[in-house]
Length: 198
Length: 198
DNA sequence: TCCAGGAAGCTATTAATGATAGCTGTTAGG
DNA sequence: CCTAACAGCTATCATTAATAGCTTCCTGGA
Image 1 (cartoon, each protein chain N blue to C red):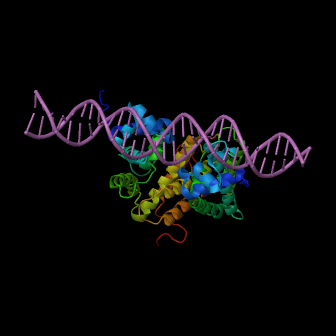
Image 2 (cartoon, rainbow over the protein chains, first blue to last red):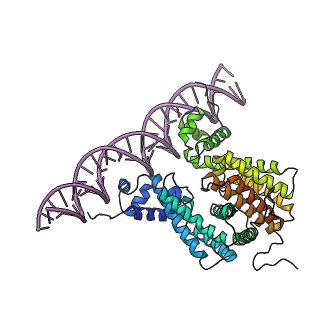
Image 3 (tube, rainbow over the protein chains, first blue to last red):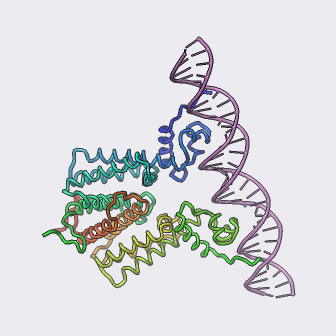
């Protein structure tokens, strides 16, 4: 019998595909093995456990996603960059719902590879914030707000959380616009008890 | 042998508790039955399936959560109400991580009870938006933005998505402040191609 | 060219879990 | 008091993650 010729990368790639098509809950070793033309226990030659497979998918998804966001921002600055990243974010998440969801998983403590990918992902956004003159803690707060708004919107949308029959595209456009406004005045926008410097 | 005296409500309540303590992935019928002092198949007398149990938890969680948000907003208006709701949101979500996560599940099509609860949840926020003079589609867009930002922040925080060693409390404060500013100018804040009325 | 060892894939098996069938004892209502 | 509904039980099954141990491929070194 000819050998299937698998390796960890192919297994993870196919698993990500399966997660997108069937949903993360239907990502099962049996289904994955069938898809790869292999028996279920054979997968353990390439992956330590289902949980570690998910971790690998998360790392790969973050890397792909960071690339997509980075490319969207290339050659743009400030509002242009922010808007382009926001739309790229939503498009990628809705196109790859399985990867996106699994990609939310935080790096396991000590997984420096995964941590590096996560850092790169944040760095892409931080670079855009620098265009608004934000750095240090200001930039971190701004990135967190940006991530929160987009991740929240996209995950609510994907899970069917927006029940009202009102255009979700339009709502997203207004959210993005609000983000643009917020970032434009982020450093001068005091929080309560922390007034703008004189 | 004395009977355990269960009913669907108690089962669902205990399941929600278990989900909070052990995480939604460890919510298992065996664990739940043990906790209730009953054998696993007995649960099927009160619940049709694990999935339907999750659906019931989601409905109950939404109802509790809507109550909490509603109470936070009582006697307040505009910024006060918004800020109070935001902080109540975060506190409840972090206090009840299992319920919160399961509560994101959308009502099953045709589950009018669950749909009613979801509507009430949205209505609480819509009422606060009315204080800003928002109604109709404007209010829906604003509610969606508000939900997105808070849900995104809280779910990233709960899943360990904020890796940087910078105060998450402070970041949340600034997010809330940005939301207040966004809502204050929501109706006059044009989106691209939709200018403010003359 | 050969062959030796590492590794890829397999079969067999186990524990955990969701689910169903069918029995029995409890208990509320007539 | 007694009967019928039903809550909870035992037994069982299918699916799934995981492990053990065997076999066979195939590559690297002599």
